[in-house]
Image 1 (cartoon, protein in one colour):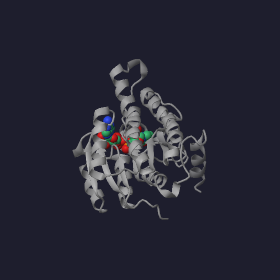
Image 2 (cartoon, protein in one colour; image 1 turned 90 degrees about the vertical axis):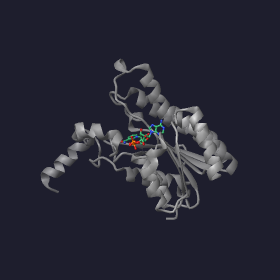
Image 3 (spheres, rainbow, N blue to C red; image 1 turned 30 degrees about the horizontal axis):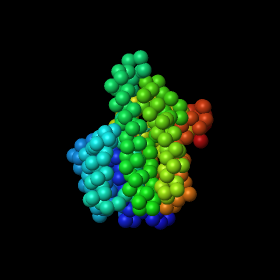
Image 4 (cartoon, rainbow, N blue to C red; image 1 turned 120 degrees about the vertical axis):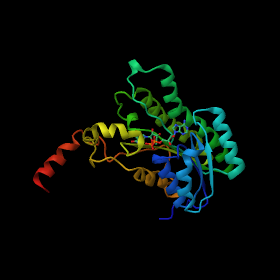
Length: 264
Ligand SMILES: NC(=O)c1ccc[n+]([C@@H]2O[C@H](COP(=O)([O-])OP(=O)(O)OC[C@H]3O[C@@H](n4cnc5c(N)ncnc54)[C@H](O)[C@@H]3O)[C@@H](O)[C@H]2O)c1
């Protein structure tokens, strides 16, 4: 299938590792030029090296995407150094488990700003550029905590649920300008973000997943890149779960136990 991504310019936030890195690599493989963002420019070194192997033109920008001035400067550079922007992937995110009773106000602000305010800041700046070019695509990382909340993830989950809501609002508001907006909802993906949880209780984590395993960052990247492409041109305002069927039934583990016991 021709995804029609050749020659497009894509900006991926939090592209230094995890899903952001894999999304950037898949976009480069499809012929996109890349703007790689992470908190510090040096965090993008590895991604940058691997993206370059696909022959992509690259701009790396160290910027905290929850900061208005930093985002403004980043988009000024995108405009002056890349000349256009076709795809924005709001991937950067931060997770620090803490129950609400113990959560300090500054931590709440950080979690909400990095996971939610960043989406507003980057999308607003990107949409202004895309509008002048006649269209574009914005992809937002939400989370399964937006579907079913998790203990210890009150601030993170509230921010990710708001991202899901904002995605649909933006899809409606930006449609007349040819800009599509969608969200993706990863389940438990094997990245540094979930390392601690996976080390503590892998069995418990995979129990409610129909496919009974964690996902790989590449598996998320494949879906996100498809949704960013012309092949998905009739999709907007959608939130796509990439979770291996997490909680698609309440008792996913029971059938696995039966099948394993029977040996077939
Ligand atoms: N891993 C999962 O299972 C999972 C599940 C649901 C949702 N998500 C979401 O998917 C996205 C990617 O997650 P991941 O697992 O690849 O995470 P990760 O921790 O592996 O990578 C996140 C990247 O974002 C960067 N980043 C953090 N704060 C930033 C900021 N303020 N400005 C710029 N960059 C910043 C980090 O430096 C890092 O490179 C996140 O939004 C996350 O919340 C992940």
